Figure 1 (cartoon, chains in turn red, green):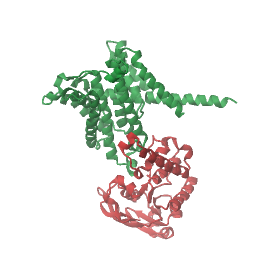
Figure 2 (tube, each protein chain N blue to C red):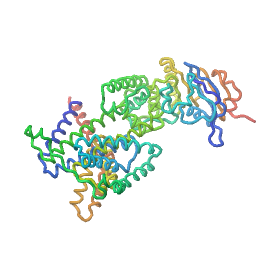
Figure 3 (cartoon, rainbow over the protein chains, first blue to last red):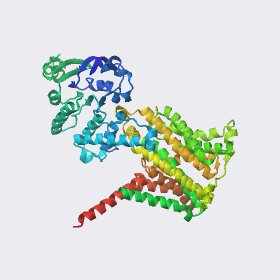
Figure 4 (cartoon, rainbow over the protein chains, first blue to last red):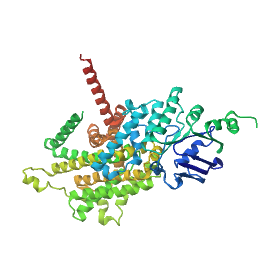
Length: 252
Length: 329
């Protein structure tokens, strides 16, 4: 489904990503791990076109992502969440999730201003879909609350619901477990797997929380200093000497 | 709840319709201006309150609308009512075109760019090669429209001020309905999403550039339509009526009325129309000092604008009623 091909990114003299290549197969959960500064988030931002790749290519279902503008990424079928929450803070939970459907709806300024019947139908569908996701992620009691007033764990779920509202084929999760307590991490693992199974999604997930990554991923890709150092099943990667060294440090 | 809201609007409409028969002609004229300002403020609020793009130069679009109406009536003999959509169309295009380069600017830089527009337009209107159209420093005098004949035929006798009030009221209602429709749906959500977090908005598929420049166009259209109505009401346009102070007054209006609130436009309009007059009555020597005191008082007592204060007051009231009902056995 997704092929990252020899991708390289530099910021000035710093090499953030160096010739990284891997595949994300359809229907699988792939975990992307590595120590801080390994280039995980940089790679994510290349996927959602926030950064330009200096070299290499990213193919989504055989089509290069590098040629489409940023706001078309959602329409192509890639949804994402952000590492440090990027919600629409003054808007309600429901409105946040409804914005998620933007790429799946089409009425513009003129039709909206006149509120023609087509707009009413579209709004109703968007609303129903959003409520479905809100119920799925157990946010029904706060649907009309302002996002900024919610606790962190709920805000993270709002982001997930918003990403799902764009009906993605590939879901990018940037550190979904950060800031969650032990119990919430456990539920999150279940939710991610349920999303994959019920909605037939492919998931690429960046995560520091090792036990979560290792327990839900089908495949794991490990980065360090912008290079790929290991790839395989969780069990294989865990045994990889370079990864053990990257995490535990080791004598040179 | 819905029924109560509808009843509220009906009462408001009835009061608005009764107004010109109760108050003097001059007051009627003043309320006409309130309606006109409310359209202009609504336009600015769509841009600044709902989309997060600050404008210190909306007086320029008000001026363009006013001059459109005046030139069309004076030079082309077009009837006054037809100049309203024409002024709106011209300002829609002008606003969109200004919005395109403004995309690269944010926050204070956008404020400066719009300030440049607001401060330069009055002088451009005096440019002597345009004098043939704009009347230069002298401006253009236009005649106030009479009530249409069919109304007199129906036995409704309205004087010019009353007729203009009702004409403006009708345009105001249409403009508020359009804004309400636009803001509560897909496009309104996209506008607010851009304001709250433009990176996330784009990741959700919002075409930020397109939405922002079209919002600029729509905002300018509202303010331009207000300008056209203003020209007809005042019967006169001249460059110095549209100085930078007008733009700043609009900004004051939306903050006092309530940012990102549709009804706030009306409260803001009442403020910018009547408070300067009240200040003038209190002290002829230092009306602006009094105005400043009013301003400070409003922002201190109602930090969310008048609309925000009313919303909070209503919420508290319904909670009280709720609690009382709950107490009953």
